[in-house]
Amino acid sequence: MASQVGRNTPVLVASTVETILLMGAFIAGITTLLNDQFPIKEAWMAAILSAHLSLALLSGLGAVLLFSLTYLSNRKDLFYLGITTAVFVGLAAAGGLAFYATYNYDFSYLMAISFMIAIISSVGAVVYSL
Image (cartoon, rainbow, N blue to C red; front, side, top):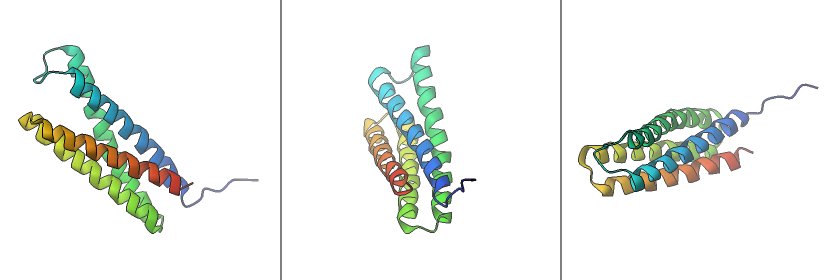
């Protein structure tokens, strides 16, 4: 008996991967914020920052994929969670870019709060797609 892929299965997979990427980016970002001095002066600081930026970039791509899949699922609850995730990942990216341009820590707090909201909405997409 062959199992069929349900309409919500791609959303479940994408939101699970997105949640993992967002949590990794958040943890690497907090580690960067608590342990680095800006501008970067040592290689280990650059490695942590590079991990944060790489995971954040991947989570941005994942947010676009999650948004697309939630749109195609024809479920409004998943669509709202997908668009919320994408918007707050974008807001986190804007906060991050503003922080690296100005070293104003208010922007890093904006980035952290945006990541937390994106994680919550991504976890919501996991739960609602089960």
